[in-house]
Amino acid sequence: MIRRPAGRPALLGPDDMSNTLSGLFASEPVSRHFDDAALLAAMARFEAALAAAQADAGIVPRTAAVRIEAVCAARFGPAASIRDAAAGADPFAPGALAAAARRAGTLAIPFVQALTEAVGREDAEAARWVHWGATSQDVADTALALAAAAAGAELQAQLARAGDALARLADVHRTTTITGRTLLQPATPVPFGWKLACWLSPLVRSRAGLAAALEAARVLQFGGASGIRAALGGRGDAVAEALAARLGLAAPAISWHGSRDRVARLGAELGLLAGAMARIGRDVSLLMQGEVAEVFEPGGTGRGGSSAMPHKRNPVASMLALQAGLRAPGLVATLLAQLPGEHERGLGTWQADWWTIGALFECAGSATAAIGEALEGLQVDADAMRANLERTGGFVYAEAVTLALAGTLGRPAAQAQMERLCRDAIDRGEPLREALARARGASPVLAAALPEGMLDALFDPQAQRGDADAMIDGTLAQWRAG
Picture 1: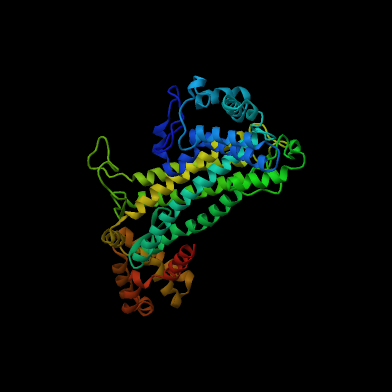
Picture 2: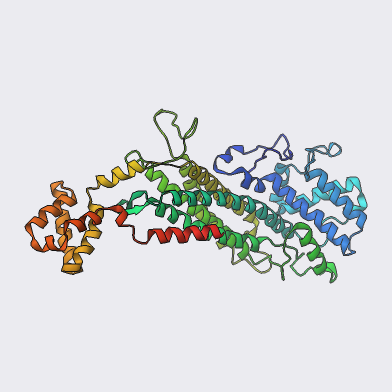
């Protein structure tokens, strides 16, 4: 997942291979916070803020903290350069750091070494104070918290866009009727606005759950070697508070080296969001099938075409959402599996969190952006919905007729009567309304139980709305209360 987004300073050396094609399955505003440059910049933010906070506490000389901050800004700030001419090959090149990290067991070790050397070239005394009292996991986990907060803000904006589009569509299509489908078969008529509200309902919960998980994960990790900050001589709490404030993070009551529930909870919420978007994508793709043709994603040059078939209009947004929804569960399982880590710092568990959480943000961001774009330009063919409903031969109203008949015959007898009548009508290729007319002519009981005026209402989809309006109103109110 190596990308260099537009506007970010180049930090990759010419020997590094940028995996930019992975942007096919990513939303750049979200995923850019987990690329190589973002990881190194977040680690540098931690080291710079650590030195400044320790200077505030009287642990690190102020001149040393200023120098460390300046080197971090020069190498990873907006005006960062690719190389340090005096150093030759860039010690911060991701490829070189990755190779060294495989030997060291953590990216923090070669990174801190490179930073110490860079500071030392400017000020040998200041270099003594780089990473003072911290440990590798402090850098990694705090970088993760910083990236998650930034990516989360972008993802929340994308979620709002998708949800707002759904809410508008649900309002517009309150009286548009579509065939309800259960087990992929025609069931009963439902308002299309209600179906849209059903898509929206999980997003209400995802928005709240994601916000809570992001807030819980927006927390500093600073415990030192084993988590108790023993190297700071009793001034660790003050440093932690100042460090957290400088980074815009919360200071936890206790170190969380071995307690990975915050990370797993955030990952689970990202997986749920990706799944909710994939569900919308699944339905849209089914409604776009040529045999159905009730809903279409927006078209345009280069969108949804085929390299072989010029007539194709493929559901590309749905495809992206489904791809993300299928990837996410395994990633969430990885985070859940690391919860029983060993002692104060686990082996082979938390070390993958940056890339696992990054991949989950990639999934959730890609799916949410794709579905949001599709919903904003969604094309709804109400005539096709009506035609498909009529094509069912009226059998989608069988439940309503059965319940009306049950008022006279009782539910078991009415159910049995209608099952026989439907089977016979299907065998004859006869619409349900015609089959009922024939049966009423032969049975005074049926004629009395189902007068013609009642049948008009039973075969009117607008008279079969049930509690759909109240459900739509309730869901829209929940979303808009946001």
